[in-house]
Length: 314
Image (tube, rainbow, N blue to C red; front, side, top):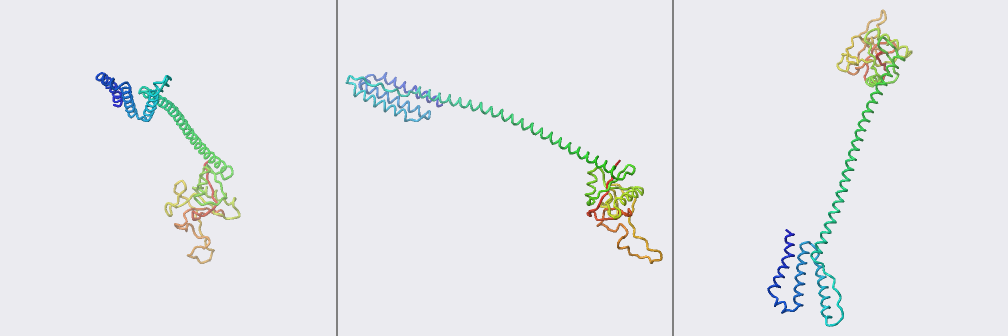
């Protein structure tokens, strides 16, 4: 729409000027050469002003040049009767010059946009490369995490194998089992965790033969003292229902019993205050320990810290 208006601004004044010259030659000659030249300058000034308004250019440049040109031409007219040569006036910008200037600026902007597109393409390429590198780092990190996990599992297996070998080399070997005493004080749960970490569990004597063998082993290791030692037996699930750590039900018991009265002494219904019959703790004592002097079983609070004996498969 602006292009059509611009074409009209350039062509219509020329047509109007041509028609004016064709219809009124007498008028032009009547006013003289100076009046026709002044009218032509006004038309050019108006046309240039309209073109600058359409293109959004400052309108003072053309007017200033026109005024300077008028002053120079006035000086030329004033000095015309003399014989001195008049100076050549500087040409004012024509509409073609303005359009050429605008097209040149547009070409410069287009070249700048082209350079920006090139830089944006380079940045996109760099972003893609960085993304690929980040993905490779993540894959490498994942592989490293898997390797670390595999090493931890291998370490656990090695510690279990080391504990099993140590238990069988330093402890008591009985059939397909090995028993090893630990002189560290632990709660019953902590003792079970330590035995499991070494590839075993708390001792679980299933018959008289194993119970007597463990009793002799503890007596020889802790004599002349009497220390209670944790076994892998408890009734946490239900009071009076004693289970091994592997969940099997205990079918053999070796509970401590109070000593019998001496011959001729009157029997007493009250239990001995220092060695009552076991178990006697009720819901407060749910874990079983074996005495090191006679091998009898006692129920204790599971949070007591005692020695413990581990069992390893052989």
